Length: 464
Ligand code: SDX
Image (cartoon, rainbow, N blue to C red; front, top):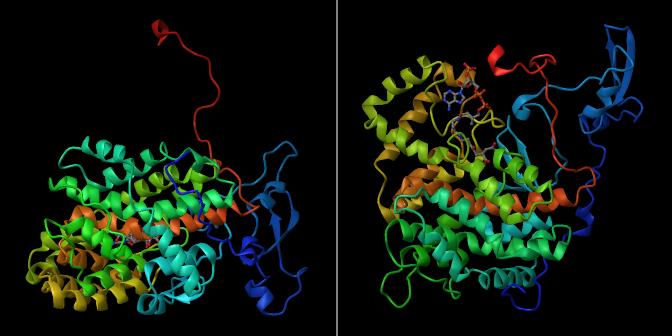
């Protein structure tokens, strides 16, 4: 029996959201067309045959292409879409992004309004449950999270095994995976109560693991959770508290980090969420799946970009070097990138970057201005007017300014992605929950285009 209080906390999965049948709202439906007209007629010029496939939500089902064959024994057509540039892997009601307009909404609420008026725990509830919580619901959820912030003492011993210079993302990813061995009930992924239970545990324990990783890296004793503080206040206390009886939380930094967690909470089917869904599709427990999602986020093209931005700004060094750096990027044939710029979906300014840029001023009033900000602002100014970036629709993304705030708050660059992961934990778990409830979903197993050698017989070594 895991070391838990008897009453299992329950995050109700809103029944109206449980099903994922969507109102028929493709562009054709919006034009008042009937269901029968919402089809695609495909003519196979190899055979002269025509096929009619239904269009739903502006998509066709890839499996409908399998009936298109030249010979009856053919496998049938597939789509070839490496990196899923044009493939919807799921139906979801959690996050909406309009990349051309730079719009981001969690369950229909604009990210700008949530950043201004909400809190990370309220957003975590919203992402999971689909509606903003009542005060009573939020208070109960907060109480459950607050009372699950501790870690089993053996986790401390496990973390002691890391070198002093271990990258905190490596520590986070492996420690979260190890947590799966402490909670065998997490394997009951089809039980909504267990999903809620372990979701609360993961949201609660991520800051504690992250703080322990930080204290390990600087050789300081671990600070245990202080349940009288807020979610972010407790995190800052576990990071910064020394011999004082109680850590004094700076409210400006507390609010800034809460907003940053909100901004990073979810982002529809990004690389790490895709990893979370793919691993969980095998009915893997959420700790092991989340460890995989953390690994995907670790990559410099994804969540690791915020750390790479600081390295890039330091490499540039002064505002005078910006034009030369931009020239190197443009002539680098894609080898050298402007880190923190560009996005698979946003072909406009990332709305999160705008909020973060505004947040920077508030933080710098407390911490002092980060001198690298001048270089970042100049880099943005030049890039936004340079045809190379304009033509490719490359704008600042969430990672371009976030690192400047994190560094000003005293976090080392290799810790920035850990902060990203704490926020994104809420989204990864909400997406997992939605996937488990989706009748369309089963174990993820893509196909391939085989271009390898035809069948051949083994050749003994003496005859090669
Ligand atoms: C995140 O998916 C998400 O939602 C992710 C995220 C989330 O919240 O989960 O938003 C978080 O990961 C933000 C992105 C952080 N990464 C970076 O800042 C790294 C730098 N950015 C690039 O690596 C790139 O823009 C990606 C990876 C973000 C997107 O790459 P795509 O969509 O695969 O685009 P691409 O690589 O095909 O680029 C198209 C063109 C290429 O030039 P050409 O071959 O056409 O000449 O644009 C160029 C690229 O070379 N390009 C860049 C560039 N990004 C793309 N050139 C210079 N600097 C860049 N940053």
